[in-house]
Length: 151
Image (cartoon, rainbow, N blue to C red; front, top):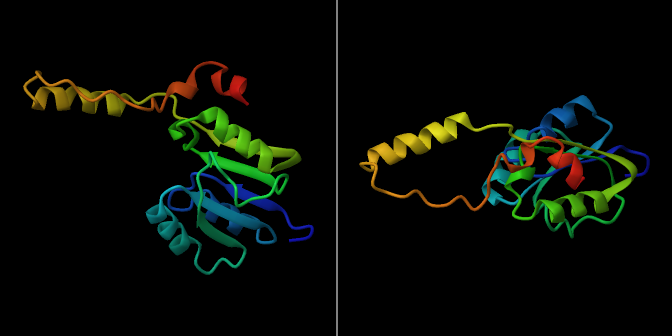
């Protein structure tokens, strides 16, 4: 690795933005991770032919396969809000970042479509069924300054 820019994309799903980063920074070493082996297979397919990128299964809440201070940049595109413990995920991201490293993350602001789907599902169930409680609220990190406070 030496002086190569080291990039980690957590919760990469089918390999984005890892694939775009690998293409944009051909001298960098890009690591795409996801907790789902199916998503990692999709990422491997997307990264095929890009010699500077690899994909592996890893939980953003436990990045044990990576040493402290390894990465110059960590990205997480629309994945952090699905962490069971966002504090732990951010702890791990901070741990693997080099001092002065950068985290770029995005979270959903609203889920109008999901809320509409809930309404339709209730209607399809004659309005008598109670929908299961969400374990994780994917918009919980979108509140003003909420994510900034966690970081």
